[in-house]
Amino acid sequence: MILALFLAFPACKRDASATAADAEAVVTSKHGKVQLLRGADGSVAEAKVGDRLSVRDMLRTEVGEADLAVDGVRMRVHEGSRLEVKQVSKQTLRARVRGSVESEVDALGRLHVEIENSDATAYSQGGHFFVTADGRGVVAVASVTGSVNVAGGGKSIALNQGEVTRITKASPTPSKPVAALRRVLLSVQWPDQKETNKPTLPIQGRVEPGSRVFVQGEPVVVEEGGTFRAQVPLRQGRQKIAVVTVDALGRRRQVEGVVLRDDSLPDARVKKRLWQWR
Image (cartoon, one colour):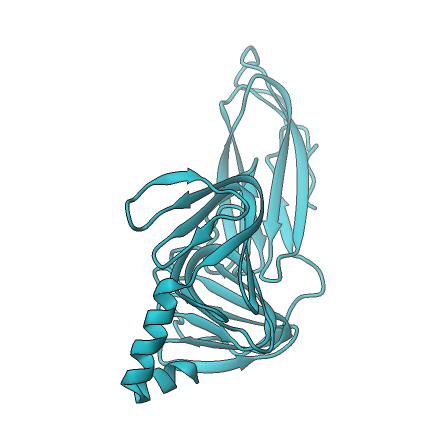
């Protein structure tokens, strides 16, 4: 609605742009490693609570998270994600994102989320929702409360409380909204042996499409259908392998296994079925 008004009244658009040029979003909390990239001069610094972001400034998280806010709009940038401010005014924020962001918009707030490397967008005038985007065209939007308008490929849908929609390169328009799964899906297939002399361990698994996967804290590519594969680097000795997924609603699930790397082991050994599906 606001965008339509801007297009219909050029004078109003100029006034809003002037206001946006002076407005800033504020970092209200952070933990872990979060970087602030300044669009004006390209400088990079560790983000701090109280930092102010204007147009073209960016937050980039690694193993950490940060909250960004203007009046009526709050956004949380989850681990392994980035957010660039595209437009900001007193109660309106427009941002381009990759990774996972959680947003809460009051009745007076306006939030427009653009998805990096996609024409997909999510817009809310009052709602709590998640956007997950892998940067390769796979997008999931989930509404916790309120409603969200999701657009892509020339189609727009309304997403209501508890619903999820997905967009992929193969299907660039938002899918029909469906209820989120009651439980977080994470199936991991481990190798048959718990002892190896190899420097890496191959694993594979399946999650709900649009989810994110981390193996030993590192992000893993998830295919459009929800499958993933990884070669996990191993150090010498016994070690725990942790696989974590975060679904479209920000819910987490972790599965672990234990493996021993011993370079003195011969290549041929009797296989022991000591790994389990979980």
